[in-house]
Image (cartoon, rainbow, N blue to C red; front, side):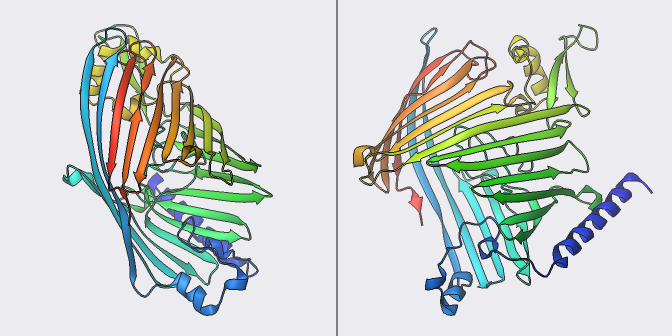
Length: 438
């Protein structure tokens, strides 16, 4: 029996065992909040207000709910290189929309889909971001099948425990919508706790290529602990653990991941030879172990008068896939460019070259109960000393008309991650016309 057939057999046996384990205990106490997994579209209703007809209304819908978001922004910007005062300008136009449908023909079945399009409306700019169904067996075992985001990590700017989703969080826009993998999620609530099993079938054309991802969530008081693993047929194997807790106005979150192998390629310096004329080579590190972790907090305050609606978020990350000395990329920029042109490297291989990162933001909405809001964002590569600071002030004339003025500043030595062309000072002015949800 070859390895692929053996792997398929193990996969099937594990799935059968897991299903039998989930259905074995008739005494499981189901939490109705988990009926549709991680969705936030279900409204919590107190028992004193709940009648059979109202419950049916919440969980069923004879028609199909349709909605979405529309965004139209115009953003001119001007940039100066602080070393030589070179100047350039740019006009960025953002026009995009997303449309979703949400169908709930009965309380045990739901279908949800979302498509997103952005200008220019070429084929690669129109994508299906979500398409899945929710269903269950006897209100005890819950399933979600299709394309959907897998919510594993708890980080805000960085999430090393997010080991399944193909696209990482963008720290500059951490709340931007991301795509998830094609998978089948099985969920069994055990009171306030949860057991999950994901079968990942992205780019799979035979049973042996299916990947498994089990996860457990435990709620202990006001804390939640999560632990899971991503078991792939090919590629790095990874495990993760998360912790969230709260105290007063503070939320604390931390996570870590351990992987055998890396989902990227690396540049390594070698002796110059006929084979390596640049003194460099590109290597896979499939037999190395990588450890990553992050720790962060969120502070929120909203006073009764609405004068101080403040949110402060900070996070640190140790990135195990980064270089011990990230200057290897700066000192060998021509060689790196050559490897990129030969497709031996891709841009994802060069992302986050350092090992130590931090980011923070402070948002003060409706400043002193006015139409103004301010935000200060900072992100830094602590390994090479480069980073970006961006203060922004926003005037909201209405829900559909907003003006923002920002002064982003990048700092660090030329050739570092945030300053490939040197330190920059910029001025950006953004107008949002008619953007909103519907």
